[in-house]
Length: 117
Image 1 (spheres, rainbow, N blue to C red):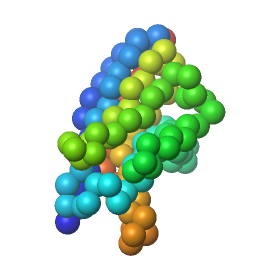
Image 2: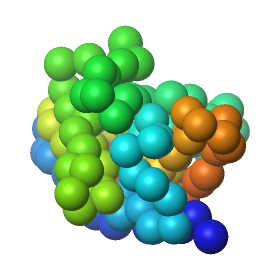
Image 3: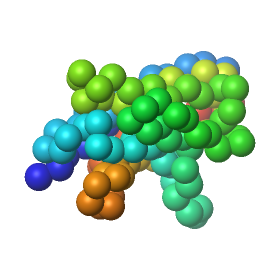
Image 4: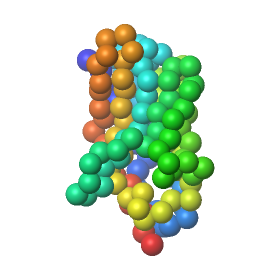
């Protein structure tokens, strides 16, 4: 059974930084494109950033230049370094794994990020 466990969320002032981590188990990590999504109250879940097993990254325009996604295949972990945080970054952040072999999607339980102004 695939499990994704996020950590690192919290409360931070505008301009601050947070680092999210997502540890994966129950899957062959390198078969998965990993991503971070977020959902703010009253809004749809949106892609923040993704990274393929080969390290190709993709970012939402709203976070380019401020957020960095990375992965450690030896530790089965994906990270999201968030700098220069803004109040509009406040949301629940979800880790996602999309297996390129099976096509299946997996989600973590989410971690709250709150940025105060």
